[in-house]
Amino acid sequence: MPATWHEALVFGMPSKYMDIDAGNAYVADQLSDPRVHGLALLDPRADEGSLNRLLEEGGFLGFKPYHALVDRPTEEVSIVDMVPRAARRVAGFRRAIIMLHVPRAGRIADPRNIDEVCELCVECPNVSVILAHIGRSYGPWFIEQAIDRLRQFPNLYYDVAALDDAETIEVVLNAVPSERLLFGTDLPITAHRGKHLCVNRQCIFLTRERHPWSISSETGGALQLTFFVYETLRALKRASGKCALTRGQVEGIFYGNARALIERAMAAVS
Image (cartoon, rainbow, N blue to C red; front, side, top):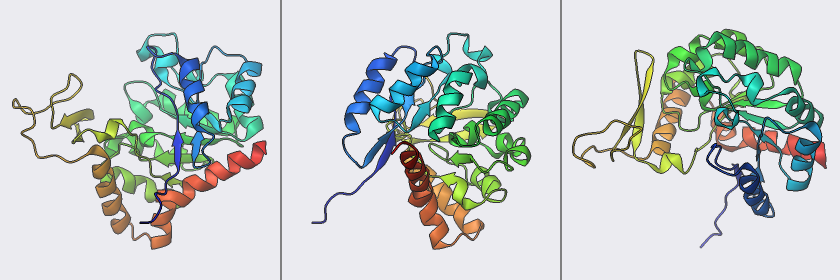
């Protein structure tokens, strides 16, 4: 039997109910495996020296900011709150990766989010900014409002983790080179069976089992649904076919594009 082969870019659970330091320490322990690379959960209160030591001593390749880690009401959080100036300076110096999950109800279509993503890309040209879930665009309308401004930045990448809408992916592929699209799993969340629905700009989780955060049938388990991560694969396959991507471009989306970002970040600190 062939040996099991995998690589991963991982980070801890970004939740205000979790211990950020403990989460980062756990991930740092896993980085002794050369197939595993990590991002540090970003505490926006940390100063520049602390953040630099965190990346240096932990072996992290960048930061994972998140709105729940900011000490403000969620609906008021901005990207500047999530990625303050100290973090930007450290990330820029180290040519690091920032995995950005945009805040606010409007997702990437929110005008403030668009402005602040653009500002981040301009202010940190050496940083690889990854727009997680294509800016939380579980339907095409959201990214359609932003792509004309975002497409100009060569350091902005688009991650399709937990995104299962082919039309949304097509919007990106029709606007930027395929080298800026990245496959991701968003495991363990996408091990649930279900699909995203976007109706009148409302993003809804449809799941086989009933959860407080989703909709389902009155009888749990009655819906015939596969894993969220398989739905992402299905959407990528459809979008790749409609956009006539080559085998090499598809391989890049699934591996090569992300590998190039990781190698760039590793080279900056070696």
